Image: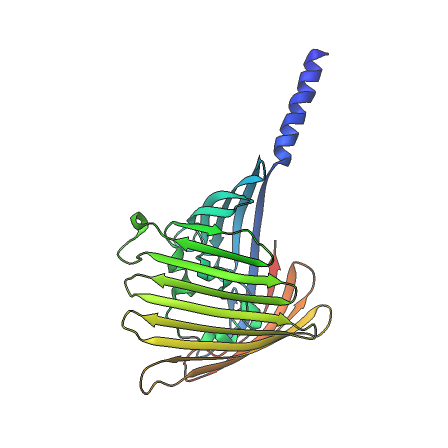
Length: 311
C-alpha cells in the first residue's frame, strides 16, 4: 500500500513538472510558382514567408519567471537545402517575466523585430519595398550570425521597446559590432514604431526606420520611411505606402507603392508597385498570388502564385 501511494505521489510530481514545461516543434512550408524578371518560370521557396522549422521551449521557474530557448533553421523547399549553419535564423536561450524578456545567442536584432510590421504585400516577396536599395544586411541575416544580447521590455499601455547589441568578443573582421533599439506603440487599430541600428563595419552604417499602420475596418493603411547613412555621409532614403483591404472573411488584397533613392548627384529614384492577394483555406494554410513591377532597377519584377502552410 505504501509503495502504491509513493508511486502515485511520484507520478503526480512528474505530471506537475511536465505541465510547467513545454517544447514545441513549429515551422512554415511555403512554395511558389512564378517568373522573376530575366528568368524562366520556376518553383521557389518562401514567397509569402521564408520556409523554416524550429524548436522552442519554456520552463516555468515559479514567481512569474520562465526559462526559454529557441532554435530555428531556414529550409529551401526548392531543393531541401538548409544554410551552412544548422540554426541560421535563431539559436538562443534566456529568461522572461515581469521584467520583460532577455535572450543571449543568435537572434534577430531589435531593428529586425519591427522591420516588416507595416510592409505591404504581407511583408512578402511581393512587397513593393523590394525596390528599397538601402544597403542594410537584413535580407541575408549577416547582422545575426554571431551571438548578441537582446532585451525586450514588458508592454505597458501599448508601449514597448527593445535593445540588442553584440559583445566585443563576438566581433569578426567581416562582422563588427552593431547595436539596435526600437520603441513601438501597438493597441487597438493603431501601430507605430521607430527603430535605429548602427553597424560599425566593415562599412559603417546608420539605419533609421519609422513605420505605422491604422486599421479603418474597411482597410488597413500602411506607411514606412527608411534611411541609411554611411560613414562617409551618403544617405539612401526610401518610403512605402500601402493598404491591406479585406475582400471577405477569408480573402485580403494588399497593394503598395515604394520609392528609394541614393542622395548623390544624378541618381534616379527606384520605384516599385506591388499587389498581392491571400486566401485563407484554414488558420494554418493560405494560398496567395500577385505581382511586383519596378522602374530603374533591374531584376526585381516578379509574378507568383503559391501556398503557405504553418505547423
